[in-house]
Image (cartoon, rainbow, N blue to C red; front, side, top):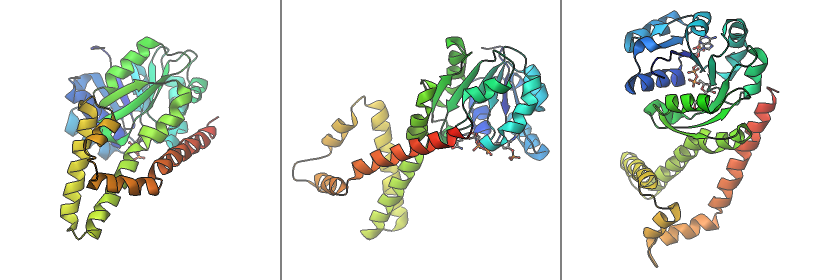
Length: 270
Ligand SMILES: NC(=O)c1ccc[n+]([C@@H]2O[C@H](COP(=O)([O-])OP(=O)(O)OC[C@H]3O[C@@H](n4cnc5c(N)ncnc54)[C@H](OP(=O)(O)O)[C@@H]3O)[C@@H](O)[C@H]2O)c1
């Protein structure tokens, strides 16, 4: 892996986060390349990270790993170039939401290994949750390369590709559900007469603290909640209202709806 050249195709928000994470994890700038449509943006990134901007055809020839980080609507144009430029054996890693490995396999040279990734926006702060799936020609060695790459910007799990709609609904959209919850809890603070900045500080730090406990304590979420739910106390009074308003059922339905929508969007690429 140390000698691997990685090219990020489309250095937007996600592409830049990956470049930055790879450098922080110890990759050398000369082992990284990127492509970007606007010359000015490319120059800024080269200035910031010391990484060379190239055109797509050069990236396809020079890199061992191509990471596709363009928006799904830009994929066709990119594939037109990659179809003739990719050298056999180059690993293609797709971060583009919803695009199946089969789409790449149809357009790229026969036998090209493709790994599909569903990341999420906390990649921007090095705390992504990424789920990766092997295409037809990708083996465990390719998945290991992708795990190594993405662990520079967060955590990684392997799932069969058929589970990517569920992943999209859970961790892809997941940060939005937490933001929604935080927003509602801040409003509750306003209702109780707290200044907005105080309510915001109280809730955000409570969210961070709860997240670190969930990650680091090894305790089940139920055990952590029970530990702050004393008999006849304040928390159980709130929990009764959450149950009365069927918040658990609402989350099950909401996440199921997201998965169904992901499957619906995916069918557009069949
Ligand atoms: N952001 C998320 O929450 C998230 C989560 C999971 C997955 N993803 C996936 O990650 C991918 C990137 O998302 P993003 O938020 O980083 O989007 P973004 O900021 O729009 O980045 C995409 C970049 O690629 C550039 N680009 C497009 N076509 C190109 C081409 N042919 N050659 C070179 N550069 C090209 C775009 O340039 P222009 O500025 O000219 O358009 C843009 O700078 C998407 O496929 C998305 O589905 C994103």
